[in-house]
Image (cartoon, rainbow, N blue to C red; front, side):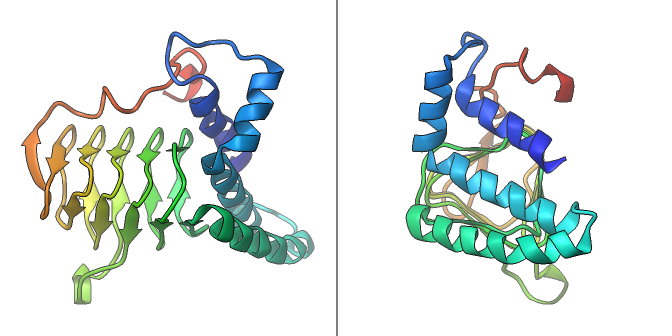
Length: 202
């Protein structure tokens, strides 16, 4: 499951919109070698598979420390931490590296965009203690912080540097500190991908 999801993660970089449906082998290799978001996503998928999907306990014990070492290298080289406890759907897109923290035991839907300087982290007290749950086709702009036990609906767009601490309904566009809904134009202009390449999971 994780490696199939990784295919669609990479497709977001190979085929960023409906107008681009082909890419040379050289182009694919270049993108993989030079895109730190792909490195971080691949390590996350590997760790998630090792911890939750690998059926062989011996192999799991052997690969777990390998995954931890790879994650440390990713943190040092890219500044990205995606904890393997998070369940992330296919089509994750991290366009730029640097100061990205995605933690906790939560879920992020399919075809979501995470940007530089993003934090999805713990906040709150008592029953409100927790981390965000993110829906499908969500765009999180650079610098945005989503904290606490909140639910972000499908097709939501979070503006740059926004701080979101409350639930956000489907299709909302949120900006500011604290985050406020300014319209319901959705994330359709920000979450882009080739629909033909990804039609079997839409």
